[in-house]
Length: 197
Image 1 (spheres, rainbow, N blue to C red):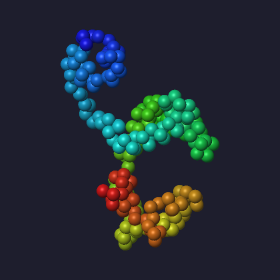
Image 2: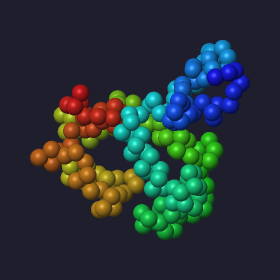
Image 3: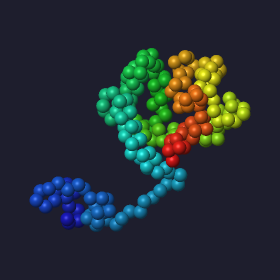
């Protein structure tokens, strides 16, 4: 192809067969451009899609699609309100929705949505901090907490949980009803069970 030729004509190969666009390096060669060296800003994060496995990205995409009620490719205040309504919370105030939207750097498309989750995951407390929080309820350092004690503490301390909110059956309890909080802290900070590694 001649230098400066229309790129659209390069999409059709011999015998009229469709050919996908070649990689950027080939395009630069076709157009006679020298390869550009990637500039990386100091402190800039890598590609947000590289932070997650493909299966995780697919799950985030499904969640984004569910929240994007009007299917315009962006999550806005009305989408958030509809999502809350679908979850049974009908009295969400405009202030609360606006605060949520302010957490984003701009309009929330899928890339921004994924970036926000990446930042939240990076902000998870270190494993040691989480372990120390659980050790308050385990002075002997056994690494296990009884599910019923967890429920009691959730319903009687600080911001008291309701019966439904403190359902300990959602926790990974063993057959004796105990929570291995050391493993749970590992899962929270590393994303997978220690035994699976």
